[in-house]
Length: 306
Image 1 (cartoon, rainbow, N blue to C red):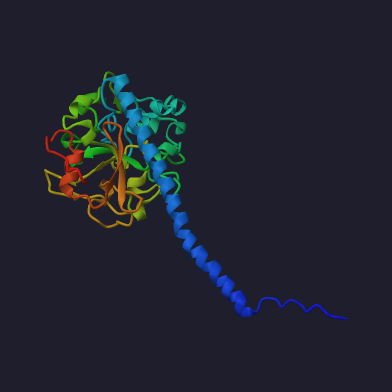
Image 2 (cartoon, helix red, strand yellow):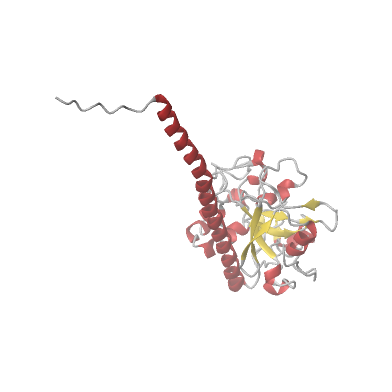
């Protein structure tokens, strides 16, 4: 009888070659997968900023002025009054949370349900998931975080802020103890953006130093009274000369990093402009251009290639 020869199995060398080929293919595939994930996260971040911009326009239409960066004078930092993140809630379909607020009172008097929510529209998917904030005087069980900030101008002083989203007018007369007087109004309208709404930043991704991420320092609750949790400056401070470029995700010790814009996306930072348009700005954009973009009324032209 003729015997059918046994089919030999893989030799060790052949098996190692196959494993090596599979490893190479996986190595080639992983960067592509990461790029797809980052592209999806960046698109979601753009959509968040778009929704914030649309909500700001709706707020302006309903109230006749641009949403303030915060109410009151925030002298009680880290306690204080509601921020823009609270005031825009009804225009982001978050009435249930907004209805928990009493805007005439400081945050420490609000029920926890008013400030504990982690809203996807306020968080960038390229950053770590939010965690309850710590160190906030008002927080019982932590407060909600967020990754976007108001374009405040080139100077942190409330009376010197040149951006589109700034605090209330006549701040010293709107506050009586821990009570916000009725009849307050924001300082600015769309007509105040004399440089043009398409040339002026409104909100953008805020830089958060790596050691401050998620519940510490400038990454505390956006519903609280910590100024640097809800606003950012950019460019060259015309009063002090302080420089605030766009920050890389790894910037930890750079001066004024906790007051600057920056992104978790490689090489760029995303903004919504006062006309509602979302645009990416390169991290290498020069200080002069950033200063012009964040100043609502300097009368200077914006370069076309920023």
